[in-house]
Image (cartoon, rainbow, N blue to C red; front, side):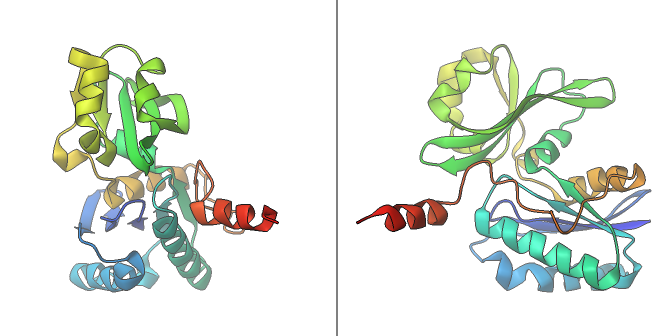
Amino acid sequence: MYILGIETSTKTGSIAVVSESGVIAQYSLNIEVTHSERLMSTVDRVLKDTGISIREMDAFAVAIGPGSFTGLRIGLATVKGLALALHKPVAAVPTLQALAAGLPFAGYPVCSMLDARKNEVYAALYRFEGHRMVRIMAEEAIPIRDLAGRISGKTLFTGEASVIYRAELERQFSENALFAPLAAVLPSAATVAEIGLALIKGGEQADLEGLAPLYIRRPEAEVAWEKRQRSP
């Protein structure tokens, strides 16, 4: 069984092909180029390098956010188009869950964090109970200064925001702040695909008609538009 994973929550973005026996290929690129410019060409490259055609994919998995509003829309639109054209199932994977899943069997709770700008982060908290990962704080947008009021004890921080706000986290949590290695702080399409594979095999495929990004908070453009409409 082959599954194509697409992750566009951050500017990095990645594409992966995963089977039940492991990761076949993954391509990530952390440069200032929009996903609309590179996503399909990257999919084509990964498939060409693996020798597996898009029609051989049994399913697709996509990161649904939170994260970049534009990136998420592009990723979901691409997966929806492919799935509808090929009549294949799709698995929807929360980005913060995928980040935490990259640090399995951590001895401390894992706080996944993405930059929400305006000194806020998108954050969620997970812990591992044997082979099972349990969410103990739901995804939310929270001011970085308020994080210590929600989380206590030794915590393993991961995600790009853990790098951006490391000094603030160390100030708030002192020796209780642990940090994932840089190789683990970016969402991985391979992890998204692996989670997606388990979801599809368990019969948990997404409803394409209702599939939408997990924004957490409303896009700034939408808020600004409403303000303009209310102005006299």
